[in-house]
Image 1 (cartoon, rainbow, N blue to C red):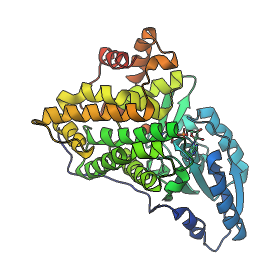
Image 2: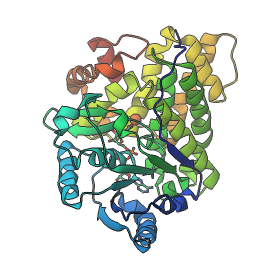
Image 3: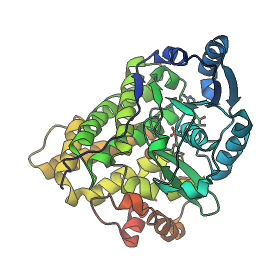
Image 4: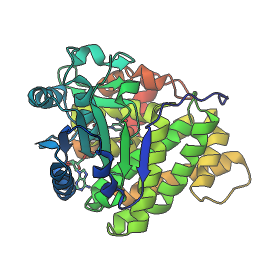
Length: 384
Ligand SMILES: NC(=O)c1ccc[n+]([C@@H]2O[C@H](COP(=O)([O-])OP(=O)(O)OC[C@H]3O[C@@H](n4cnc5c(N)ncnc54)[C@H](O)[C@@H]3O)[C@@H](O)[C@H]2O)c1
Ligand SMILES: [Fe+2]
């Protein structure tokens, strides 16, 4: 596999990391003019929102709240928040939540005062700009949306997840305070942590891999695989939560420059057509896609194995295979034994799912091995 020597990165100008950094948000609103701040927040973040609201209101800023967004938001959910945001005309949008909330906050910040339709923004580089300041605080250690240029919405009519990818969606400031994740129950911690692991592995085993993103991705694999079981078993383990948030951040940093591959491409229809949570759908496919890709990236999977703490075997191939076993065990240990049939998916659904997955060419083009319709069906069948 070739590794590019040039990496092109557009990043968050202010990135604060560490437990307690939430307390630094209000101080960043210390300009001369009072601001109109729109909070788009997950319910689980109510305490943090209350504290920030108090601090910002006391400093003379106007604060307006939007909550009640569903997980894995659809175009209509975004439109409803955009409609509520228009008369508010915020100068700043603060998103506090998982990937679902952050993606909507990013799009609302860019589009609440714009005539551009969301339809015109889907794709890469189509969003025309953003005037409002955008601040993001993740409450899951998973999606990496807090540093990525991506926002994903479900298109119910097309039964597809569609992406807006634009440098205007990279926040102005991001605060990764893992204490915001402490309330995440074990199932959510597991699914989101495995999503982050996918971001790292898919960035590393990727036709567009770069040396810079390789460094982030392998470190992310190390941090996530070393902490996920502990964070799932004991949600109040602050060290494990912090490690997981760091791994997730590192995976998120890879999303802009290299993005994901076949795991995410084939997982999208599982979410859009059958309601599997994003992280669960990815976790189901991570092992099977690694086995499918193995011949085309033996050395890369051997490095992933090493980052997961797997002792080297007598050949890179054997190390890589042991790494895939480790990936499968980690998924099993934190999520249990799950299969597609648990979501009512049967053999008859597979050709449709595969056809849908193959439309996600922006990600499949990055996969180290070409995926045909038959390949995609076989991958789904292996976890039926
Ligand atoms: N923009 C990107 O770069 C990017 C990358 C990957 C995934 N995504 C998108 O992100 C979404 C998934 O995001 P996610 O996996 O972070 O989950 P999520 O935002 O969908 O949240 C899942 C559920 O957990 C709840 N929740 C969130 N934080 C919590 C906490 N600390 N305690 C208790 N409950 C909490 C939410 O309210 C929601 O009900 C999908 O729509 C996916 O397509 C975006
Ligand atoms: Fe993801």
